[in-house]
Image 1 (cartoon, rainbow, N blue to C red):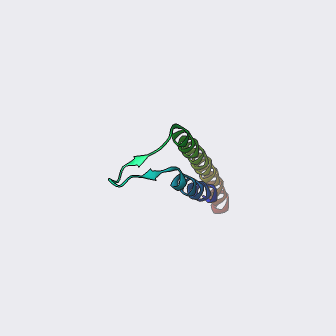
Image 2 (image 1 turned 90 degrees about the vertical axis):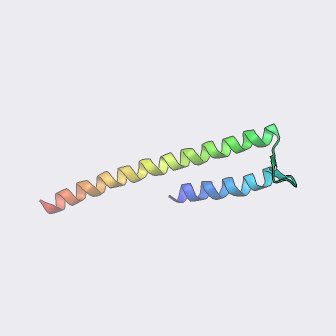
Image 3 (image 1 turned 120 degrees about the vertical axis):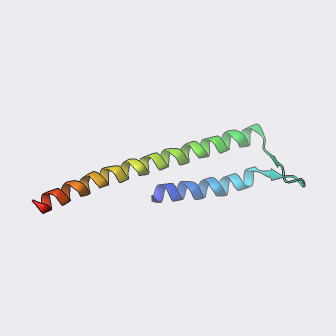
Length: 71
């Protein structure tokens, strides 16, 4: 979860500098900014997947411990 939050904060802080808002509310990005944003979202997605896998692993360990304790 810490990785997810950290990745999210880094993505938000980095991407906020990459956008240029126009007066009509539109958003303009260069191709480099788009690539950088895609990389940040990919990293964020990977961190989230790692966190999900870790939670599943810990849940299995908890279930195993509860079964052993109850018998």
